[in-house]
Image 1 (cartoon, chains in turn brown, green):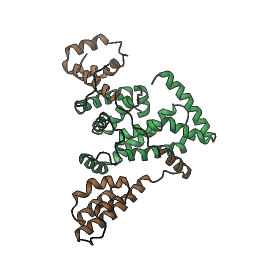
Image 2 (image 1 turned 60 degrees about the vertical axis):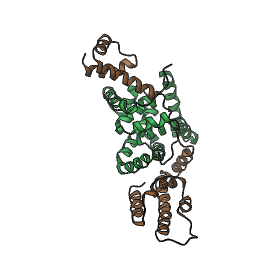
Image 3 (image 1 turned 90 degrees about the vertical axis):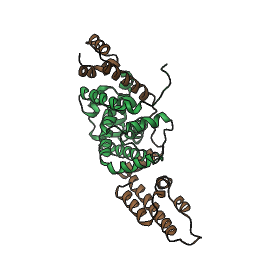
Image 4 (image 1 turned 135 degrees about the vertical axis):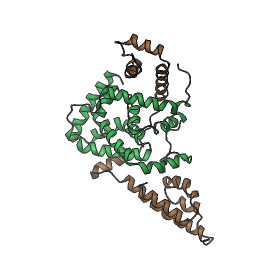
Length: 150
Length: 190
């Protein structure tokens, strides 16, 4: 048995279904440290992957599916997100403009303006806003996000 | 999943599909309740992000709602459903290169999934990050095998590949994953 044959049969070995050629498999494992290490690596990967918890579907997904089925088409979640980002973009540009022009002191500060948009937009913008210091840079960032349907 | 359980599930599924086709509005919801989480988990593993996965699951269920009338009962409903999901997810994964770059930037900034990390445990997040470094095709076989618990034969049928190709992809996926998972620690084996 060579290394290629070993790799072809390794999953049969791991699930206990390798009968024909089992002695050759064991002999190759004993004589080839690289293949023995690969086998150990796969076992360790399997152990880790077996411990992973699967994520659950969001609880509001079925109502959305039912509504979409009733309309005969998927509801535009993505479009809603873009609309949310448009709202956030407008808020961001307003805030950045106020900051850049030394706006009236009674205008809401950036933090307050961003809080007026949805939590998803808030999370994204909180990580991105500090990187953009002027209106042009912020506009370019928002434009990039919208062009990419983010 | 045991053969016996799968066989029973398959019979139930065929009955639910027939009930749906005969106009029973509860049947489609029961199919969703049975498979919604599994489909979401597969979609999430492949596309890598909660909102995109939710979009995708919605699209898949709307699509199959319309196409169940063409279901031939020649394969199991679950196989057909996973095939539709995986094909859809792989197409989506290949479309999103620039989107993925922005997402990666946010992740690297320490903000995590913009849709929110809902798994919570460090090991889930570490494995998810490692899987996202595989190609979509490699993480698909890993997801179907270890996270959905499907057999090589079922994976081959879903992906319309030979069993040998499935095993080759799994081998390559493990080789790629090993260094990415080397710092993930579990307790001792029982």
